[in-house]
Image (cartoon, rainbow, N blue to C red; front, side):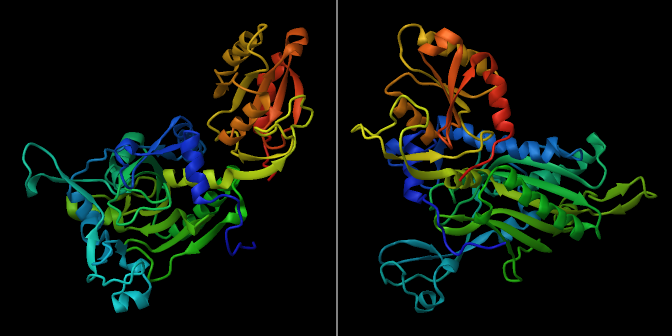
Length: 467
């Protein structure tokens, strides 16, 4: 598989950030007060996109696997959880500050030359000594604020799975190998937050922990690597923008036996999208040690053999997947008016040729599946269009737009990533047909409105990205 050396797409972080705000995907948190650094709000289209990505992952992990079940663990957990997991001791970043410009840096992100000379990479000022900075958010629970009331906002969702492992084995009669999947919020007091929603203080994770018998872990690890790679193919992601990165000895986390990242080529370069880790028996062993509870699995099908299961983890950031899908879908192209269209899709000055911005979402991920557009507001066309929308909304996410020239409405839907538009015109009143317009090709075909739902279902099932 050939690999791209540098980003060759049309998206930039500036373009993505601007489009996200303009179309209601993502807003800066508390913007009217100047914004909260490292926090973002998901608008009407953003929350739909995020939910669809989450639903696709959930279906892939639970519905399509008979031996994987779900969990929704609490954000607030007993503080001893984080001692056992190693987060209290090891979940740190090296931190330096510039004494002149006051900019804060992660020391491991500064060149060795600048760090050795204690020289700020921005202004050349003097840097402070490196100090460790724990990334967990600490708060207090109860009426008093003292060391006995300290509690943490969870920095990852995995530990909620581990502490519930025995509950799920017993309540659901799970037999190894089996998995537990969870989607949930996590919080990290990041030193540096940048690149839009790529690295934030509040985010969501999609994690699955797969429990296996020791000795079978390496084979299972390789199998999950294959499955996670093929998942992104199903989403229609540009596969030449994905690659594997294996963690070297200096990169491996303290719990990991082996680890690979699926990296995506974002506009700012190759960055981690998802991790697949062989955590061996570290996690359950530690929780057994710190809690005093026996975390061994009893294999009733093999003479009650007892062992601490090994764990294969797949861990992806939901909010980071949102950014990846936005970047991957973003396209700009110069186009003439739509094929077979009687209405120009020209720019504001009326020219037939212009540039359009389009988000080429897979229809299963698009915030809006189909937009219903009456050619005119009058003569009963709006009412007919609303009737068609009412028929489709039970099965599809719909939008309705009757404002402006039809070409400009197509452009708005392209920019929102809507894969299909249905135009209701005067012919619709005569013969019961409507115009079905395809986002990617801009092709338009006449379809009987009685067959519209079935046609949409077939188009979604057979969808192939053309660019």
